[in-house]
Amino acid sequence: MTPLEYGTIKALNTAIRYDQEKRIIERFLKDLKDSGQTKFFLETCNTNALCCGIEAVDGKFLYELPTKGGKQLYSQADFAFFYLYSTYAQHVAPVVKDGIAENEVMENLTWLVPEISDCKAIQRIPRNTKELLLMMDFALEKKRAIVLSYLTDYGSGHYITVVHRNLAKKTFYCYDSWEKNKHCRFGGVLEEYQDEFFTNRCKERLRFIEIYKE
Image (cartoon, rainbow, N blue to C red):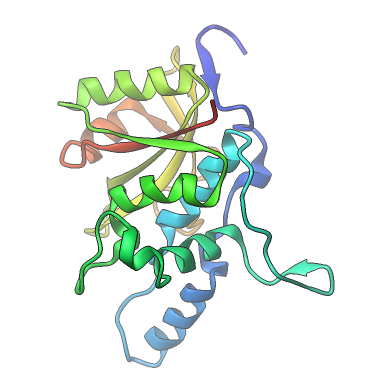
């Protein structure tokens, strides 16, 4: 890498990407949607982005997943979702309330990182979009992963993992767990976004999570 390129240890290892549509809860929600019992699915971009961020900094997960025939029955992103909705977490997570999706709350996701991995996390709240870009740059210079939510053209928020920076090109490289997202050109693998993408789409979402190992 040149001095104008920097990012997480495993930024370019595409195996760290998580596929959102393979999550257990997504399969269940899709069945409900297809049968007309609900109008939505694709609810786990947050835990997928979080686990991708943990892997991007070469973090290790604390819990061994169950296997069958030598294959894992579900992923760490599934486990993260289950963990947050467990009886334990529902008593101690920062924001728990009937009528809200706790997995969408950034305080809960920040809390979840050291609960399920050997990594730490901190939530950053920039004052404006200029400071947002500066803080993202600083995090990536320190080889930290960034998990953030941006406003989509679908009228909702979407979580992705930012792992690499090309300062000369004013480009951030990200993993997106939803390959069919209209904002993706490469199936969610090392998607390239110019600075303006974040200044336009995060101006009302000035917050992100830094994931790191000491």
